[in-house]
Length: 339
Image 1: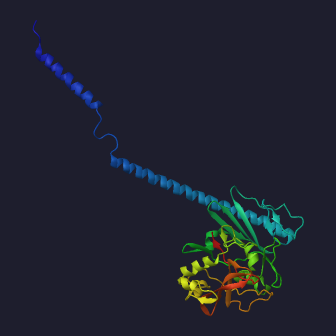
Image 2 (image 1 turned 60 degrees about the vertical axis):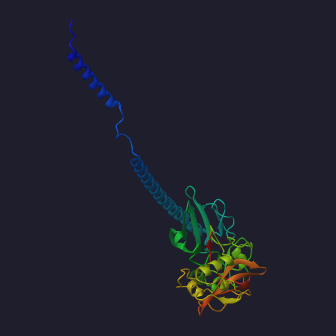
Image 3 (image 1 turned 90 degrees about the vertical axis):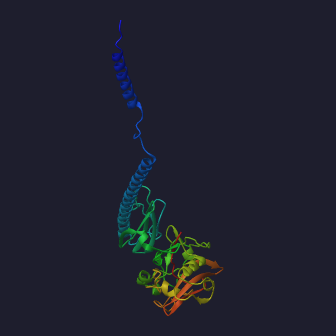
């Protein structure tokens, strides 16, 4: 029997072609999957999208916290206004439940406790019988208000100079007492206003004896009467500020002397430092007020020596800064420094 070899060879070639086609379909393509460059690009794109998502979430959270703080402070102001309407004064302080406490009102009224949203903390300070400062914190945001102002971002109340963040204003909190009254450790934050005039506290800030300002502790950098997350600056921290403004170290170290060049001018109202320290004068230990309102300023440090404490003195007619000790019974201004 004769075999058809030509037909067999054609069949074998068809089989080989089918096998090659099947194998080629099974083999990985040279163009399939990611190259290293494509993988890196993909990772970068994912990173950018993640960053955008995080930034967006952070922004939304910040806005939500700001809205919550504004609402908390507005509601608290309403409660305090109701308290004032009944008692003709604002509370001296708040207890741990944010309920008003006042030695002028007996018993203390628990009907006007301040309620806040979750994770909001409050800090209350009385400015006068008719005004207060209320500070609310949530996360990294801090908002403040008074009886006569709307809630605002507390960041607007601070200025950064070098590595320090200073309050833009002299403190004005507490209950007004006359100049002849000695401020004492009686659980009432007391303040002097020049010539016993509350309007001068509004313009220049209040005056405090050193012990009252420090709240009867002697540690340098104590919080004292400053608000949360701030303290009364030490003598060294005042020096850091002065050197930041261009004073030489050897000048900064001088005591009982006018020091520097124009640092006093920089610190005073209208100066380039932005601190705008008003010329609030002061109070003598005997109870009278130092002549020179709008002509001189005195500001405490938290550094002490026995019955005296370091302070800074400015005058309208002098461009430099005076550094010396003063009796703790003087009444001087307080400018706070952030922690």
